[in-house]
Amino acid sequence: MTNALIVIDVQNDFCPGGALAVPEADEIVPGINALMEAFDAVILTQDWHPAGHSSFASSHQGVDPMSVIDMPYGPQVLWPDHCIQLTDGAAFHRDLRMDGDLIIRKGFNPAIDSYSAFFENDHVTPTGLDGYLRARQIKTLTFVGLALDFCVHYSAVDAAKLGFEVTVRQDLCRAIDFDGSLVGAQSAMQNAGVKLI
Ligand code: VGL
Ligand code: ZN
Image (tube, rainbow, N blue to C red; front, side):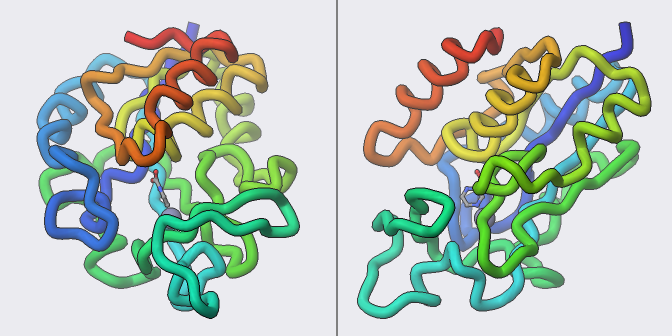
């Protein structure tokens, strides 16, 4: 059985000092690097927004970061500006091993956010990752990275729905944990059949 490690969004803006810093995010980098050895394939994802992206609070009138608005595709948290294409904030953590097989960028459509590595937040527009994994006959996925309660969560749930055998290594993830998002994410992943370890 062919397995892949999927490393979600280990980028400067999600690390301490970044625009959308996740507490202790940098602590997971050495463990992720070491874990890469154990997999047939290593795939990195990169949150990759154009300036003025619709998921940024700054793109809307009179709303604060971390408030929620209704978008045509459903509710959307409005974030501080982060991971803008070609900026240092969008770059991978400097210590992250970069010898993986594929980098999948997401969130580049100005009108739709993309938490999941598989689909944009409309839950129908594919990123291409599913096709790539099937073409390589990869059936088993392990997720690590940032943030556990957003991009790791939605990626793992989509992967399980697509029929992959999915594990999330929570010790190699860190969460934003805002407004109950972490416990909500853990129960959603469990209900989807994701193995949480
Ligand atoms: C993420 C919020 C906005 C993540 C990305 O990687 O979890 N969260 N963009
Ligand atoms: Zn983002």
